[in-house]
Amino acid sequence: MSDAWRILLGIYDYLLLYLGLAWLGLLCLSWTLVAGMLYPLMPSRRASALGRLVIMAVFRAYLASLTWSRRCHFDLTALDDLRGETPLIIAPNHPCLLDAVMVISRLPNVACVMKAELMNNIFLGAGSRLAHYIPNDPIRRMVLQATEDLQNGSHLLLFPEGTRTISSPVNPFKGSIALIARQARVPVQTVLIETDSGYLGKGWPLFRKPPMPISYRVRLGRRFDPPQNTHRFMVELEQYFAQELVQGSAFLPAGAPAVASLTAAKASVKV
Image (tube, rainbow, N blue to C red; front, side, top):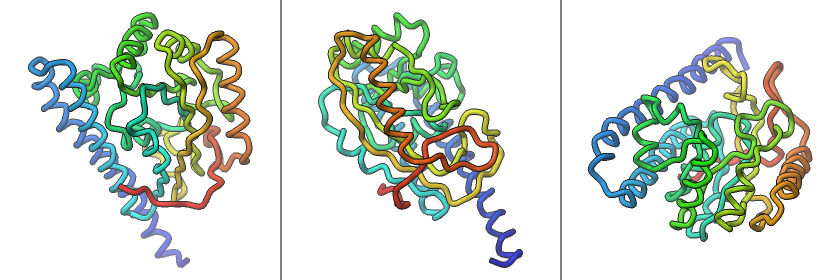
């Protein structure tokens, strides 16, 4: 590759990533304006159904724009098998900020447990409230709201690590997932997110360009029955993720936070 071509490709990659983030921000902000007006007017059930459907469409449009660039590749089709399933908790590992975007982009009726402060975020707050997403604090209210949502027939997206992965292969897990699964009496479907880049992982500066192209693959893991013993369940769940994700060696840019490696061939997302 010539130096001139390398420079041009680098410029293209910068434009792709950061105009892409601007595009996502514009989509979210536009929906925020609409969702803020609809929230006090719509019945709860209809509001959550509409809110979740629109967020799925927004995230899918964003990922599609990255895919069309041929510099980002996503294999998310495994998630389509969860559509139409009975209520369950979807539990992925959490290598980067795009994880929730990838999962939600494939599922039309999923509530997301998210950081409480994001419920007032200018880009995400109104849409999240309309979709009846669930703040993670206080814990007792979060467990009650998540249980009620599952009993109403939806899926629940909850990252057992609580935050993006810092130590490979996964951070210590939070016990709230076991409490919700036991109280709602629903299974926990593990989801394994693998990538060959540390992009937007914990500690990754927002405007730092990663080596490209970047690939992501999502695959369904083991489905755990509702726990009887929450402590034993959490130990087993964390061990399962560690064993599954450590099978491939870490493949990271220098200085990037630890993430699971991508061992499969790169494939484009189907949208």
